[in-house]
Image 1 (cartoon, helix red, strand yellow):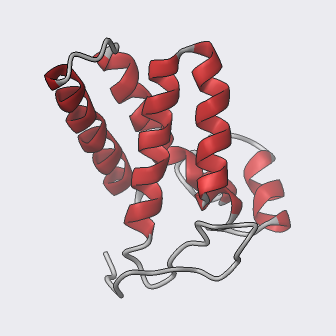
Image 2 (tube, rainbow, N blue to C red):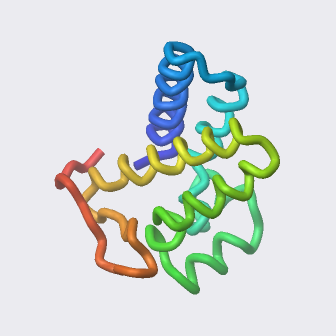
Amino acid sequence: MDYKTHLTGGIALGIGTVYLSQKVNLNIQPLLLVGGAAIGSLLPDIDHPKSYLGNKIPILPTLLYNSVGHRSLTHSLLFAAIISTLLGFIDITLGIGMFIGIISHILLDMLTPQGVSYLYPLKKKRIKWFKFKP
């Protein structure tokens, strides 16, 4: 999928989370949550040098691509947990937003023929729900 689809999905899920959090009176910062979700929705593709973020950050995408490949580590629940926990130490709302964005990215990529290794490194098999080609 392209970055615009991932960004739209992350922002939509972030806005939905803000709406639900207000219904149950959770004290979150809406812009921080949606901003985290937006960044998180793009972050998993940091493992590909030709991705939207990969074009903007030198070296790291190539290192990740050559060492673990595309749609493995950065498309896993482990990656989502580590990144969101680390950012949660800075601000819990940011951590939640980042988690939401990464999860939205993983779910969207599960709709493609390539699928994702969301249980990486425990299971390297790629899981796909449908064979939908965007």
